[in-house]
Length: 179
Image (tube, rainbow, N blue to C red; front, side, top):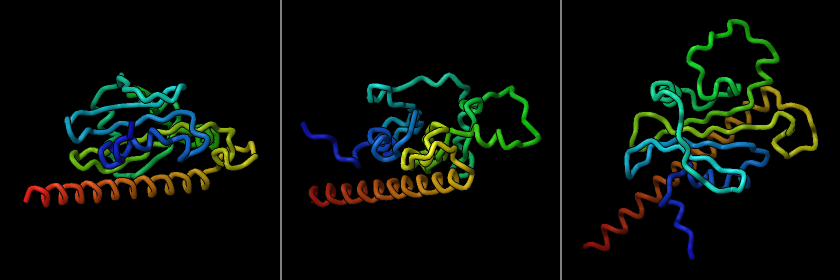
């Protein structure tokens, strides 16, 4: 049986299906997106057996929408920030240890049908060095994290752009066949 063409599935589903090839060293991946066909919010993750399944988010929609509405294309967060302790007091002073504990990367992408952004949430092991690309057991520093976040965001944003172009071409082909 043939797999569906990539343009027939949401971009983040394609990313989720291939996350271990795309980004070595990922521990966990969660996608949250607004489905174009049903106009509903969907959350999926990849299980330990590499199955993709929908998950139920046990957070207030208002808190989720705050994250989906942020302008920043990405940010690193601690485990306690995912998903998202509403009553937790904000820390005023940032310590070096706080930065090292930020091992969740939240990437935001424009959704074609929603004003709110799609989310890709990745968890990295702190002892992986450069995401399995190095034998080093040192933690990622802030510069490395920033570079990784920018590269991943740009790559996936390019996938969104390609997906949009592919869909437009398919629509044109379908319309030309009707004539």
